[in-house]
Amino acid sequence: MSGPDVFGVLAVDSGGSSPLPETMPSILTLTVNPTVDICCDFDRLADIGKTRARVRSVAAGGGGINVARDVSRLGGRATAVHTAGREVGQRLNRLLDEEGVDHLPLGIAGETREAFVLFETESRRSYHIVPPGPRLDASEGERLLDTLGRAAGSHRYVVASGSLPSGLPDAFYAAVARRVKEAGARLVLDTSGRALRESLHECVFLRRCNNHEAASLAGRAVRSFDDARAVNESLLASGTTEIAVTTLGELGALCSTRHGHTELRVPPLPGEPLSDAGAGDAMVAALTLRLAAGDDPVEACALGVAVAAAAVLTPDTEPFDREVAESLYPAVRMKRQAGS
Image (cartoon, rainbow, N blue to C red; front, side, top):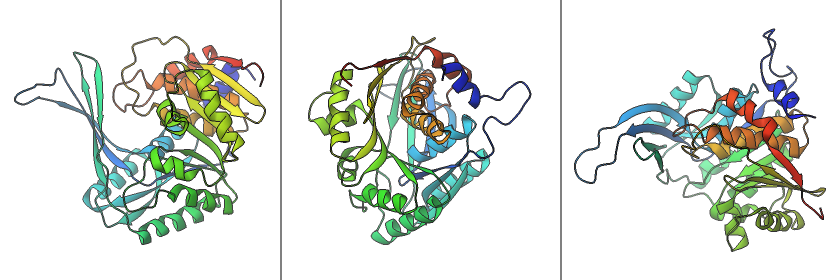
């Protein structure tokens, strides 16, 4: 299937018809540790005294919430399961309601965190400042698993994305994988650190790692497609995933299945990269949406590369430009690795 035809399914046609078939299954996402993202820009960060900043946006954030938003932006349907605590949690819920994102909040005792995305206009540098978030107790974790398990029964794909707050076991995502499997759904997992390592005790449908996360698994730097292949082969051979996707920043991504490995290279960008905040979530949203539509993993991953490339052209966590993503998609170069 050609690139333009695949992306064309996502775009509303000239007749104004539905961008996706009405039978398209909704995607469920999980955000255990969401944020309210406050995005500001300023001319230059002062060493002494005050830096006068302009608030660009305030939005609900966190891995799974970002994925749900991006699925909707691409014409799909998504529901976000997430925690919400105290005053900031109420603001998070209100922001999602105002944005029209379908969501299932679970109230917790701790305060939902606020994160800050800062953009210095003179240097064109972006800074993402993220506190650890509230502590969840065991009962809150169990209630979250129960909520997810009930909702997963009516969804074919579940995306769990983001970090874990303190209080939950590092193996929490392994428990998520079991609940999703019991519900008959497929899990797409995107996490890092100890949560990533402990999740390896359960098989998931697809794992997405960036080069830093892949390096933590390999115990060495992951800079090239060959480096990514070694990581993906290890994940596949261990039986912890059916599809392994490792992203390599400006290079692109390597998509690996039992049928082999395919390099997907980022096309030349029509502008200067401004921020990678949210690019990984945008990629996961696009590839999961296309998997749900019936695409093979490589085609789905190609769209993910194009959407992620469009996302880095926007400052802070601003949404990607769909027209830019559509223009980049046909230029994503796919190459089957030799010997695979």
